Length: 235
Length: 302
Image (tube, rainbow over all chains, first blue to last red; front, side, top):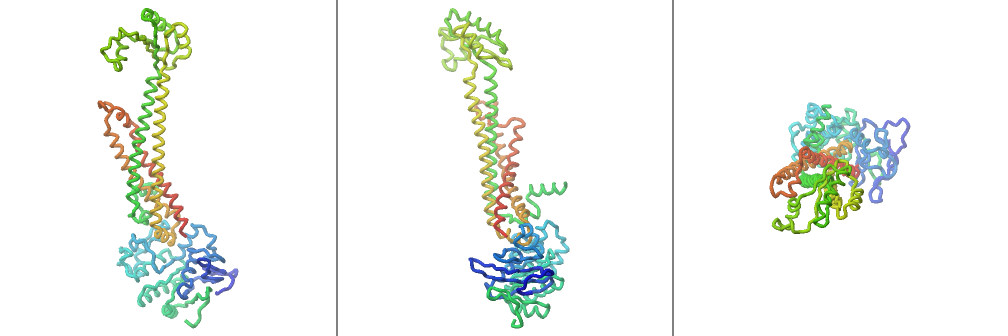
């Protein structure tokens, strides 16, 4: 799945083809070719500043590659108009390290936001079930500022999955969490993967990766020297 | 149909899920409402002035358009004969409904404001005046002037054109100024709402980014801001309009002595409905201005 050209029968949900991207004229990623298969579980690791967040942003079209192409669900992201980008993001759930909530909305309103903006009404029972799944039933009416770091991450996860996206991307989701809370979040992500969701998590927490490998068949992509490589047993 | 109605009500009331996504408070709330209110208040007065000038111009035109005067300046012993000749000519002239020579007392009353009531006018060599009332079709002033000068030397026709023209011109200009004022007020309101909307959009950039990240289309986000600003500007303008209308209603009426020009500033009858268009125009202006600002701001967010 690494650094290989796409074949005609390619079923990958995310495909990078010779992607170069950087800031200020200096490439952070260079000639990256990656394909992510549907239903797979990938970790993306590497030192701080290596380009993990940049690679994730290229996946949900927050960035457009300066060279090469990124395709998601077979569509090249650079060719998408703004409405197509919005529709793409309904199929790709994203959990940010800083969660990024609307501070004036309650947690249940924030979690329901992807449904609200799509013009549909959320079934309160389904929302209740989702909040119970992430253990936030009692915090539904709280504002984001009233939540702990772990609660915020779980709320962000609930928001990311409420539209039943096919891909879930998480950027350092356990960065601000203690180990117990990290494992709890990991368990939720593994559950989602068992439901058939494609999971891509950027993290530098090797313990989390090792813990995940005991529960699920996870591949590890490592960014090194501006390229992405498949990490082996050295983890 | 019910959904459309609910949508309209939600916009007017500033409710609905889409409206919740824009933070309810912000530094631009009160300046927007206040400025829209102030602009609407001024617009009510500008409209009132424009309408009053329109009425004034019509009144001046009407009162002067269908009347004329013949002034007969001859030696006192020939005055009666000259007046009779003029009246005979006028009776033969098509377009003249009535011609009547003013008597000495009426001439005295006309001059009293300038020369005083006590002046012995009978001792003065005053010209004789003949008042003419035209038919709707009017008469040919040039032909009548030529005939009078030929048959009654000393008789001079004054069809009030030289008085009427500058008055109507002035009234037209004042009316145009009123309209220009209204246009400027609308433009200023559009500029103000645009600035407020841009400030709010800049302040809420993070909100816009989050909305885009969770899959909101540009149209959805723009609509949320447009609703909020349309509601604010419409509400402010409605209050400003009502206050302006109340102020106009409190102006001295035509019946009140000493009211002078102020008595003409009010609205008459159905004219009272016209200011109610101002909040609607304000809302439309806010809608267009905010939509343009929102589209510009959204282009800066992926």
